[in-house]
Length: 106
Image (cartoon, rainbow, N blue to C red; front, side):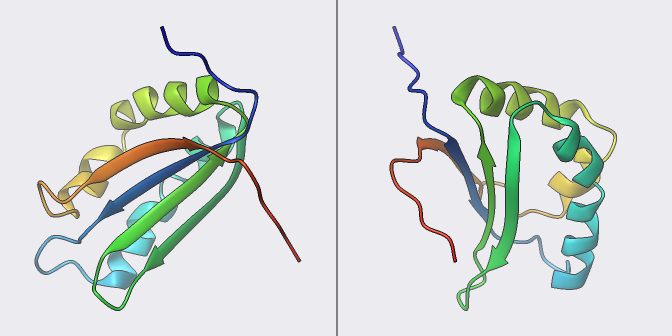
């Protein structure tokens, strides 16, 4: 039995882009998911970043694990999802959900 803490949850998805997909094109595809993500219960913040090694990170903070898991289950069923997934190198995706134990902002 999994016990969910009352902490906010970080959803962290790392991946590489498929051959021929430009960063600008991928950002545009990601922006197509904005309305869906914003409308999900428990959504707090989202960041998309890319490292010097070409690995990307899509980070979403959810109010709780229930919200994170519900959004993760609904995401692939959305109209924008197929194009977004085709832009990612197959087999390069690593997704995890982690309790946020401490945070700091400016």
